[in-house]
Image 1 (cartoon, helix red, strand yellow):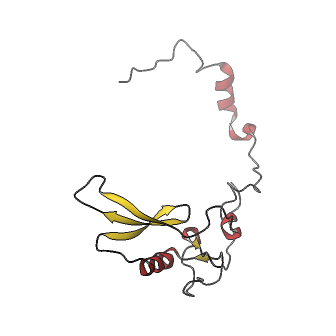
Image 2 (tube, one colour):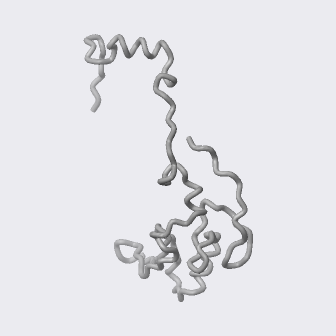
Image 3 (cartoon, one colour):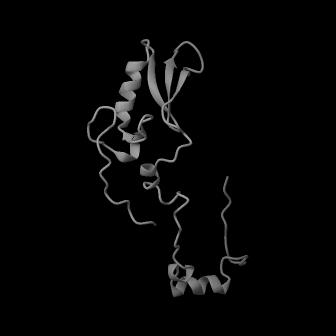
Length: 143
């Protein structure tokens, strides 16, 4: 596993100036690219959109939100009336990249050698062939 991400000061929320609550759930502000609180973005979109009683804003994924409509009389019960692309889904923000070194392209894994993962008893069992087409292995029938 890569070392944990060091504590960083990401500055205040660019939308309302409050401190960031959780960097892992932050959404990139389209104007500055800086991380913004998820709840702040949600509140901003609720104020921008004219929502009826059976509508609400939901996170769809990849930096986009949607206006969800609930209609109890039809199937499917929920539908997305409008999709709102809040952040650029193709932009690689540096603050987000450092949060996920295991999936970043600049991360070089350093796996532990297999010889260090098994003790001598496990190596003996694997070398004896036990478990590989051994006639005394019983596999119960499953339904």
